[in-house]
Amino acid sequence: MYSEQEKNNDDAITKPTQLFPLVRHLSYRLTPVLLNTSLTPNQVTAISLVLGLLCALCFLSGNYLTGIIGALFLTASYTFDNCDGEIARIKKMSSEFGAKFDDMADWIVDASFFAALGYGTSQVMQQPFWFWLGCAAAAGAFIDYIVDLVYHSKEEKEETGRTREEQASEPKKPQDRLDWVIYIFHKLSRADFCIIVLILALFNITWILLPFAAIGAQIYWITDLFERARGYHT
Image (cartoon, rainbow, N blue to C red):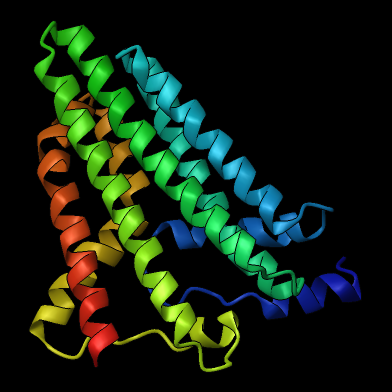
């Protein structure tokens, strides 16, 4: 049986209507559980960060079993990361600090994962080349974080008085082919990245991410910069 409060909370949670992102189906089921606790959105973000760092620790060894455990930690981290925003909205606890803390946690999780994966792979294969690929991917994640900070600061200066929730409910829809390419690469691949890692870990080929990530992370922040620049000047 649900209490009246629980029913109201469940009604406020948006049910996924599409298959992707897959992680959204996990957070949709976890959010009601977290709403019945005293956890604040920032505490949920902190849990996501800790889980992400535990993931990185697992990948440091380069071991198959710890890699799978690390991928599960990463999936849990992404799931909690999806929950914090919903909890903030439902409990009316949104804050500028919370948004910035969430962005910083995302960057730390991504960067630490790639650096740890690179180090673990270099130890197993006895080739430092893999570690530098991981560092390149981590650097790309850092640059993307800086891009977010710069454009978020510009957006704050042009704030029209709408709340963060109102702006979030009006996401920019892809308008042309280039917008769709950016959307698929920058939004969908990022949302389900943890699922990709888990699948690769099960087949013990997570290392294959490193060359792609070293290049892809740079494309990621470039498309982010381009997307934000287009949105800022339109």
